[in-house]
Amino acid sequence: MQYPIAFSHIGISVPDIGKAIEFYKEVFGWYHLAGPWPIKRDPGSSTTKFCDSLYGETWGSFKLAHMSTGDRVGIELLEFEGNYPAKEWEYKRNGVFHFAVTVPDYKEFLERLIAKGGKRRSDINVMQKTDAAGNPFVAVYAEDPFGNVFEIFTHSYEVQSKP
Image 1 (cartoon, rainbow, N blue to C red):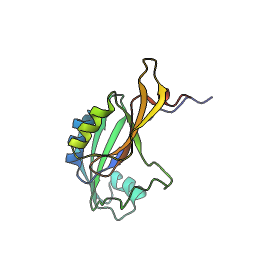
Image 2: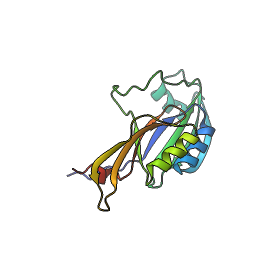
Image 3: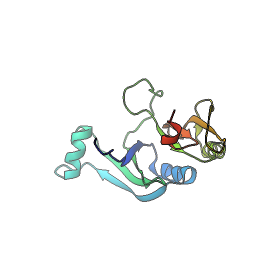
Image 4: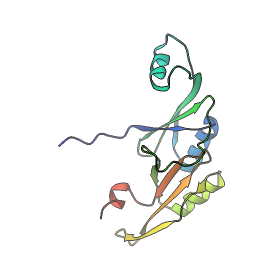
């Protein structure tokens, strides 16, 4: 059996990296580790060579910042020059379409999220399943002010996913 590979970080594209840093600090409580730094296309540099291999040779610049969750998962925020919002949430598209967070009080979290410009995206799913203390398992989808969709759980993933 192979040892499970640890999750390092997720990259989130945002239209305004400064506002995103403040939003994620205030609403999620994430730590701001470093940045934002401007990354500019500079032919001949190893960074440009790497970015060209990923984005093609038409990118001009972007800003990059690092944050971290309470359980040490990295959050890489990127603000690309010429960025634009998706026309709609492409939930049917193959690939990553949301991330999820665990919060102790989903009602309080949703209030804070909405007060800072986010929105609830789905109904609140109160499941019949409960924890040892009799608290129901709850899930709800939400959206940050930048159009990124995420799910809110009241219990950790390994506990919530058990049959």
